[in-house]
Amino acid sequence: MSGRIEAVLFDLDGTLAATMAPWDRCWSDYAARHGHTWTEIDRRRTHGHGDWAHHLAAVCGIDSVERVITDCVNLMVAQVNSGRVDLLPGIPELLTTAAARSVTGVVSASPRRFVTAALTHFDLLSSMRVVVAREDRAETKPHPAPWLHAAQQLDVDPSRCVAVEDSAAGIRSAHAAGMRVLAIPSWSPSIHPPEADLADHLAADAFQARGWLRETLTAPMESVASSR
View 1: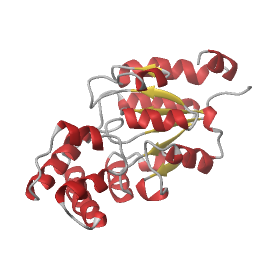
View 2 (view 1 turned 90 degrees about the vertical axis):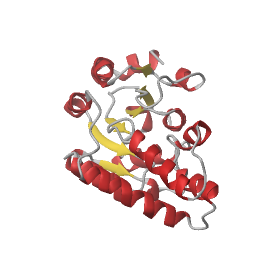
View 3 (view 1 turned 30 degrees about the vertical axis):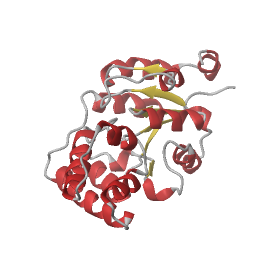
View 4 (view 1 turned 120 degrees about the vertical axis):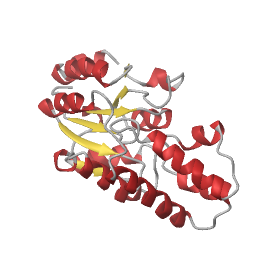
């Protein structure tokens, strides 16, 4: 296959921004108000999964998933707008590296209102050629549909995309879509097999990821394919 990587697509929560701890506090507090103690099992069930609201509604005994989404998004948008959420270290530099040789986009399992608020707050919205949020596909991570939808919107073959992810569910999702996967597990201390074996590169942080991404974006696709 000739040509090069054309697009770098980023997950948002835990990949671009340090939002996973705030989301976890939001879910934990919400569950506590409804009589449920949030545990590590709940965290594993929600991290990187687009159906987190279904899980939260179930453990809280709430009939309306949309009510749960509205309540939690209201809290998280307030967190972002008040400046209590930051980009993760090294992300501005990683974005600069990506944008120098490709188009960039965001593929998130979070609701669009939160995604838009976060990207606007960080002044990133205008630089993203595509933004996929929870509402854009019936299927969500770990299903590959969100990544495939982003590639389709960009008119780029999935094999010419790099997906940047932090969660096991996100890695499975992007790999199933046929993309190269750069994993930066900021929220979990590590990614374990089998997801670790699906990632093309595991980086300790965005600074370390930058070198791999630069090399990948400058390598011919023949070299990329042979390294998989």
